[in-house]
Each structure stands twice: as structure tokens, then as C-alpha cells.
Image 1 (cartoon, rainbow, N blue to C red):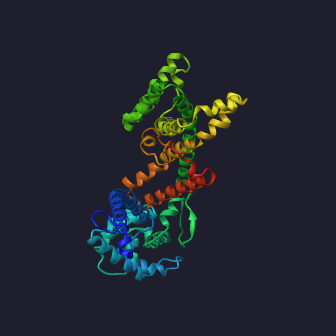
Image 2: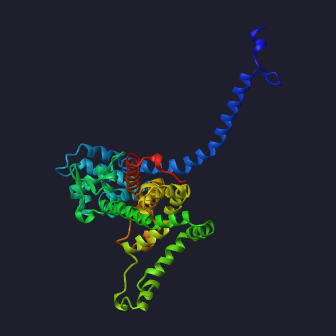
Length: 417
């Protein structure tokens, strides 16, 4: 019998190995077709926006595109004396050209990010230089604004004239370039971002700890009571998800303000005087209270899902072997709930570190987090480069903490049931 006759074939006469390869290839193509929509959604709603924002944090082409000859001349400038007349003339020509091209406002705004006050100065100079038909331009520009005689003004143009620059990351860490191009700390009264990063980290860790302390007993109770009661408790835990976040935050404003429900109740009990009520709103206390209530379900649900899988027989077996209830809990039950603690803590921390709405509404001046300033630079100041740098540092910090968590606890121990 020949080898061709021994090959197994399907009912339609196709060799079985060929049929299996076709089937495997068809299954792979089917799986790819199912994955492509999810990949496209992730690409266009997550990867590209974040990548674009991070790219803007180092890409700064506005000044160098509008004032290319001035930037090139300032690269050879030693920053010890004012630039020469040729550089003044070059800047004057390019400012007039930028005004005619209607881009001088963008240039002035970008320079203002480097040094405050330059927006008005540049736009005014560009407008008045249109009437100057011949040099010398140095005295003409000094007559328009004496600040053109400051070395810091020209240094700001030079620093802003880098197409790819770390200046936004320096600003995000309270540093800047000096007149000679060296990196120095900003003035003490302008140092806000490092303090905000520390505050955001501290608040996120504190809220995570509070949610763990409050959520663990609730999840334990839900996992160990009869189903009828646990279902009722689950409804109470999920109830906040059925209410708008804005409504819940506004409700906290009503409850916590000086004439609010909480203070009026304490006055009714006689615990406080009307002139000495608690200030719990528009400060850090309001931020902590509101964010804890909003994020608490995100701690309870992972804990409950893990605790529900822990057989009660484990604890009973430990007690039958002579362990006290406390020892049985801490040596048997608690270690088995650690994956839920890790999942809940990581979820609450990541949500807290990027929270925006609640601190914005109830935080006031002292309860603002770094996310509020990222939103400010994206929506109000339009300094998207600085917003991207702040976002990049925040993202890097979260990834660093995630790596530390993986090293200490292990990502394999993170479970949701």
C-alpha cells in the first residue's frame, strides 16, 4: 500500500493534516477579528491621546518656527551683554512678519510661559514696530519697552526657541533655566508643583488606608452573613453607583458647610456652639471625606469577591486544632484575603491619585490636587506642554509604585475573586 493511500482524509476528500491547518488558521483569524475592535478602541481612546500629550511635553516648535533667524543668532549669544544690533533687527523683522501672519499671539503666549509679562510686551512691540521703517532697532525697541534691555528677556527667547526641550519638565519640578542656560530652582514663592505632587501622593495613600480600614469589616460581614442579608448589604454598597458623581459631591457640600446638616445636627445635640462650628468644606478635610465615601465601594467589592471564595471550614479547622478565634483569623483568614486587599488598594489608589471633580468642588485652596492644575493648564492657561509634563510625571510615579507593589507583594497575588 502506498503512502498516499495511508493518509487519513475527511469526508470531502481533503487530507486530515491540511484540514486541521485550515481550521487552526480560521480560528486564529476569527480571534484576530474579535480583538481588532478592542485594539482600535484602546489605540484611539487611550494610547494615542496619552502619547500625544506626552509628546507635547517635550515638543515646542512655536517660537523656533516663527523666529528662526533670531533663535539661531541667540544660540551664539554669550548672555553676558545685550545681543548686537543685527539680532535686534532680525527680531524686529520676524516679529512684524509674525504679526502679519497673525501668529504673534501664539509666539507671545509661548514666551510668556517662559517669563511672565512677555505676552503683552511682545504683542505691543510687534504692533509698534510696523511703523518703524529703518534702523537702528535697538533704541527703537528699548523706547517701546525698556525690558528689551534685560538679559533675562533674551534668555527667555533663547530657551523657548528649542524645538525639543525639557523646560516643561523643569517647570513641573519647580526648576527653570537661568540666563546662562543652567538649571536652577525657581523662586520660593513660585514653587508649587513639588508640593502638589507630595500632597497628591499623601492624600491618595491616606484615602486608600481609610477605605481599607472601613471596607474590610464591611466586606467580611457581607461574606459571612446569610445570603439574604448579604444581598441587602450589596445593594447598599452599590447604591452610590446609581447616583451621579456630581450629585453626590454636591450633597457633601450641603452636609459639610458651616450651616450644613452635620453642623446643625451637632448644634442640636449641644456638642458645639453656633460660633464654633466645624469647617469641613473647601479644605483638605472636605476632600478626604468626600473622596473616601466615593471610593469606598471600589475597596469593598474586590475584598468581598475574594473573601467569598475563602471556605469557612479553614477557620473552623484552625479553631478545632486549638487556635483562638483571633489567632485563627490572623493566621488563616487574613492571609487568604491579602489578594483582595492588594486589588482594592491598588484600584482605590490609582483612582484617588488622578481624581479631579471632587477636589475641585469641595477642596478649596488647600484641598486641590495635581489633577486640578493639569486641568487648569489644559483648559484655562492653554499651557499644554506643562500639562503634559505634569501628566507624564504623574504617570511615571504610578508606574513606579506599581513596580514596587509587584516587587513587594507580587502582581500574581492580585485577585478579584
